[in-house]
Length: 414
Image 1 (cartoon, rainbow, N blue to C red):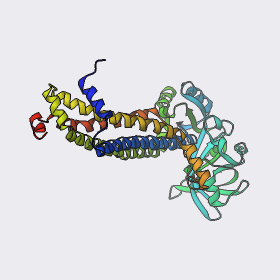
Image 2: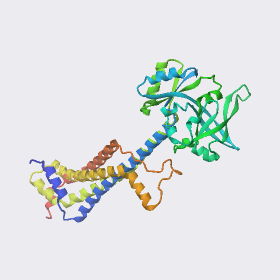
Image 3: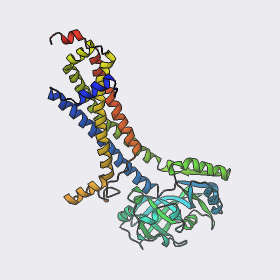
Image 4: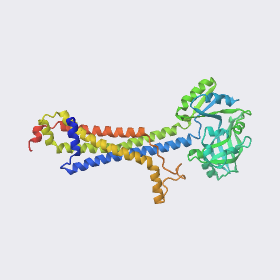
């Protein structure tokens, strides 16, 4: 079988046992270092993807993907919901209200964001029903002024279902300051726990009660909340709905309320990826050191090849092939073991917890009690490509040095 001279000799040098065992050891450590770098990057990025996915499911499963409102309260929200549901991406449209105020209980206060919801329609757009730990969402009845609070709020105030607290909201008035506080007594009818900051900053009441606190007429609502199949299309879908509804309507979406959090998470993933890339870069420098020593060890061989007619380009190709083979094998080993580790890291951590009887992640400190992992093959491809590229670049200088070897100089003392 015909093989180019550079590939034939380069692969033969890779397989051959060298006289200098130190060079073989450095070559092996370069391969292992590259494999460990690829493995570490795949596992860490998969875990970060898992945390981001959990945060998206929990936080964005609770907050509106987008809201539609007009300059004045909506008399019939069903008409707006019907227009929204004509969009293929929309999976739910329900009445919605939003208030901001302070919760007060026995002299203790905390800020709170209140969402007015329809308990029967809310499961179409929210995961709240899956995270009720006390009471029931159905206990939010119009006129009863019930509230469902988060677990952190309940723990801070030492509240349980059946307790009462006070909601204080600002209200525009003709007073000298322009705003006067309005107080409303609320009954705790449920407690939810999603394992995120919303447990301490969000409360739910019936949208009719929210309308009464906002001085709306019976049947009027502040706006409509929609949920989408792909929440990352919320800005464009909401804009299309507003365009169809006509003048006087406006839209808001989660990128304005929660976008900074997920932008920070994306930036964190990028920075950690760049830092872990340094491990691969160190392994690539080891490849440079390995090839430089190989070139020094093979000076006589290079001189003989040159006298037999090998061109400088062919000599350069020999050592590029040798370094690239080291990079390919190291990347392949790291990629395979990295994928296996990322797919089983949750089970592995659970096994370690059972063996050591120590809980690594606890829901009292973190919002989940297990280590999530979401392997994305786009990340695997990017990591392996970066490793192969760095490995290839690491071969250029030693190969160039080999190509400049002068036969007469190399064979003078042989």
